[in-house]
Length: 117
Length: 117
Image (tube, rainbow over all chains, first blue to last red; front, top):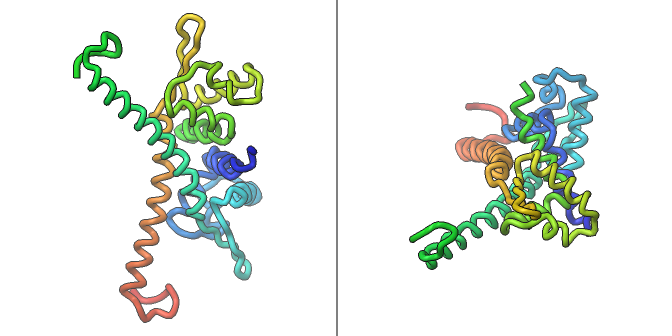
């Protein structure tokens, strides 16, 4: 049963690291080679590659090797999946606030929950 | 420098677990006591409390104890912070696609994407 959640597990796990988020930020603005991606980081190339593997496993990034250069791209579908989950929660919460507001407007004389409409 | 990222680290880390996401889903629809929250899960109460501690540390959930009952609430500010980060990345990506579309529309005869301004 929990398997249906695995993509979101991996997505949010991948996004929980600041270096990986910085890589996603960079790739959102356009494709980059692995060495371009590595440049701003004070970390070894193997460490960068390891982060990229986590990002690829999560579906956030894909890469292709042409000749000697591996180029990385953002994968917007995965980003949308994570966004959608969070947006749905926010909308649940806002709907609840709306219902509460309607209730208070319809019951202005309730002594609790504060006052008149 | 990385400290500014710590809230997002904790937020995405908290959301990477399916049980914690289910608790956030439940709380988005309204407050719940710890035992109400625990009910759908095949896990011990201490395990539930441990997940709640991760959620509280991330800022996604707050709780208050009145008498013997601890009631948990969603904290929408934290949810918005995570949503905002993802939405910004999606918008970066869409802006890039728009620019690419404009470029291709203005240069219909280019064989590749390279070339003249």
